[in-house]
Length: 95
Ligand SMILES: [Zn+2]
Image 1 (cartoon, rainbow, N blue to C red):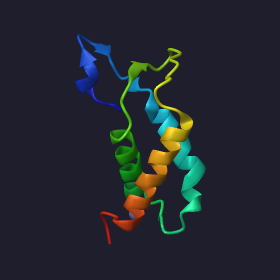
Image 2: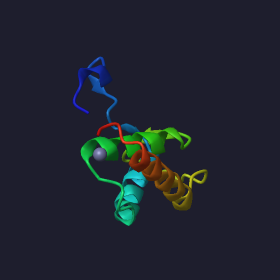
Image 3: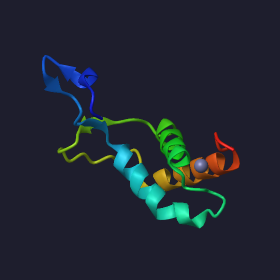
């Protein structure tokens, strides 16, 4: 994210992230090969990422901090990612 819109008085907020982002990315990498109908193009992977994150309660924290997120488990994330892959594979935004 290289944009000045995440600056306040020259101080960057780019390192404050939804801590579920990395969980979702790891989960997509883990399971996406199980879906032959999922084409894995950039647009579809981005759609899965956005759809999955939209369905998980967001918790924001500094990237370097250690947060124990007890509300969302790896299993929860994987379940949402599998749903998102199925949705996007069935209804891609492109032809
Ligand atoms: Zn695609």
